[in-house]
Length: 134
Image (cartoon, rainbow, N blue to C red; front, top):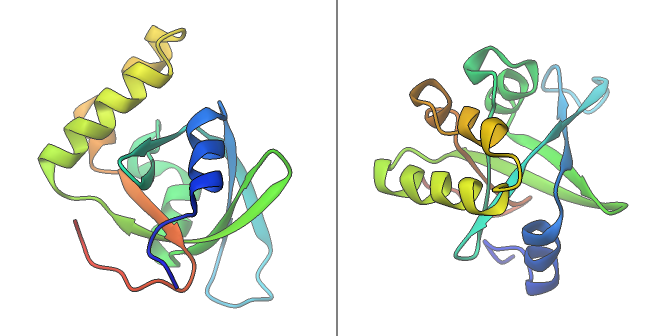
């Protein structure tokens, strides 16, 4: 399986203003999924999200404990696997993408580039891909 979403999925995620991210409270398939609205950006051919509430956000805690989830965009469900994006240069590029994409909301976008939020940058890959930290 490709480590990237296909081009139509990338265009959708690049164009859509908000997505819902689905996480589970535990590791079992029977655990109740929860959805949260988040902003998403595409940098090169990778998809990124951040937690505006830092590491305290429930969806972030759930997704880092169990990195398998799904995203919903325009009635499409895309199964995902999340991986931390730790590289400071990459985090800078993700910040620039947030500021560019959400320029009509400058005060809100500014919350996504504060130091405590940078650490919550997650790369979302199609479920079933092999993951390495970048």
